[in-house]
Length: 162
Image (cartoon, rainbow, N blue to C red):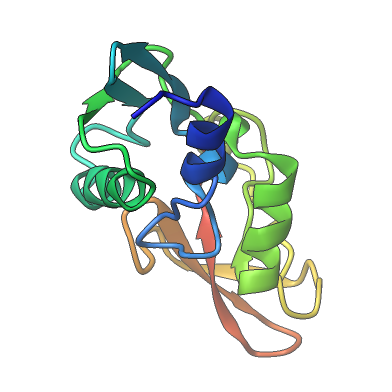
């Protein structure tokens, strides 16, 4: 099969994150590109954090999507540089997170509220109130914290800054 780079890019745009299925690997910013050598395709992805359990499933999903598109010699390679940060989440990714009910990161790169002692203001993705409260540093996955909105009383995940 002839390697069609535009076709490969389009196939990879469809691969979603298993933990947040409204986000593609491109929305999340973990997709770093691909390399070809003859008919072999190596897809490069950066883990959100070391040991992220979703990376194995993402690799399976990438290979599956590529095989469905007719590319059978596919390797998924985890690369550690550049180090992934929440700054890599696309604007579209931020919008999709909010629409899905997860508050997107409110700061750049890392959460400095721990150093300053200031309470982080995380707007509710349901009603947009800033009257919210941290319930737990750990939400439905390790990369999220659990918050609740004092105004609409809805609990919600917040995608932590890394």
